[in-house]
Length: 479
Image (cartoon, rainbow, N blue to C red):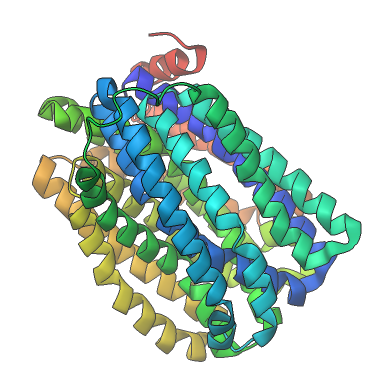
């Protein structure tokens, strides 16, 4: 693995762990403070506002990252043009979302959601500029500064949520607290980039940004709908806030591997953008095959261990009253594992200048997701929703992975994949055998199982001394 790419992935992983820790603290805390019914409403509102957020947080910001990464000399022009576009777009989206709050609440058959949805609308413009500034940093490949911004945002969000909830604002406070994180991150990002966008304002065309951004926006909206569709269908079909609360808990926990390992895409994006712009095919192929090997080396054992211990995990994180979600949680871990692979492949496709291909791939999954949820939830309830997500994400990883292989002639080393899967199966059964252990011992159990996993990989020569040297260089900042 390229050392700078590896170090960027390490920075983003640290930032993402902080993000996940903050998310766990918020969700677990609110789950206990508010109870399943109110927590279910909170989960629906937060997942709903992510749809317009991702309309703004991906298209224009990713275009900025791509074109800055390709050629830093035009960075100032790109920053100026994308800032103007983001301002106009965020104001339009804010008002549309705010005015449609009643329609959304009626669609979800819960009129009481209307005011909560309106309050959540104020998150949208702040989050839009927060995302834009973090992607400016990404385009310059200032991974350390970008990670710091992400960490500050996560920490501030936790403080904001609980401060407002404990002041007596309850659900309103929980939603408004989500505004404080991106506001703090935006302030720090602006400080790092102060003065960067003041010259050469007219050297870059709006059309180029828009042509790249539109398919990315469509992709982002669709994939975020796919990720959250199961919860919305659970709410709409079962019409039970308690069931929605259970599924919110399962969904939140199952996304942990996805959020941690999908950070590879953030480091890969500017690297692939630059190597493809320079037509350096060999470098691009090396990025893909080495990154996928390391991704699967860490992702697969994490998924199987979490899935095998889902009962104790949900008991540890949410308490015994959320235990009805354990089976769906076990299935969802597999589903979000496939979503991780799918998102990395789609990221590679987009970074190479083919955002329309990624858009078409995710649009193909949309009717599949809707049909599966409609059929499976009435029959299998929460487990049906989890199955719908898993099948959809599996198909998505096959479609995008197939395109990457056809276009770049590389994908995953078959021998490495076989060894990683084989050892992971052994670890899975070991985790099941230890399933009766106390939930409090889960962190220790995870460490022990992963240690055994890597020792086994080393013994079968899949984890090599060269890999250990690479990890050392990444961690200690060498190379």
